Image (tube, rainbow, N blue to C red; front, top):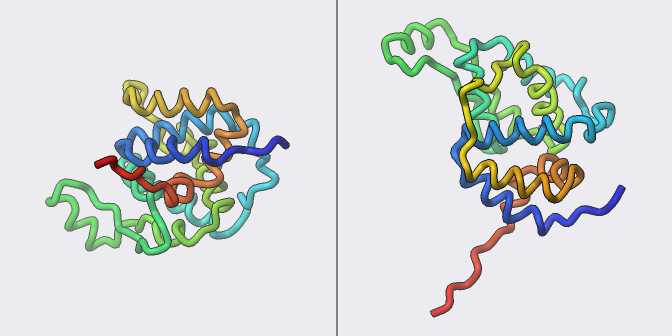
Length: 182
């Protein structure tokens, strides 16, 4: 396996984290479609009870709840608490809350190591359109999202896989703004 240059990925991670959350999700789907054959599933903890539990909770949600759950999971970190996904309409949200609506497992997800997070997204990506809501056919990622995707694609599948495995959070955490010239 050739070595990867994480420094090439840091600016792309920063661009990724600056995207709208729906563009981030669409970009993740495009990346997984591109590199899924390069990620050895047998090397991922896809059978872990934590991973299966998170994917199972998302699958039990309605399509709209799944979209909101994916939006909440992508940026989740260790300090997040599990959130309850409710209908945006207040008249519908109160009965849902009283019925004990499904919690988005953001806290559980945030506690996972990078391989387990990759396993969650790997399983979710495999189930897009069958068990997990698919990206709407009329949705087009923004120009900025496609620029990030094209830049990643030009680096090759290994770099794209590293981008996903390392996580945008880890890659962008050490990015500092260059000093401004006075």
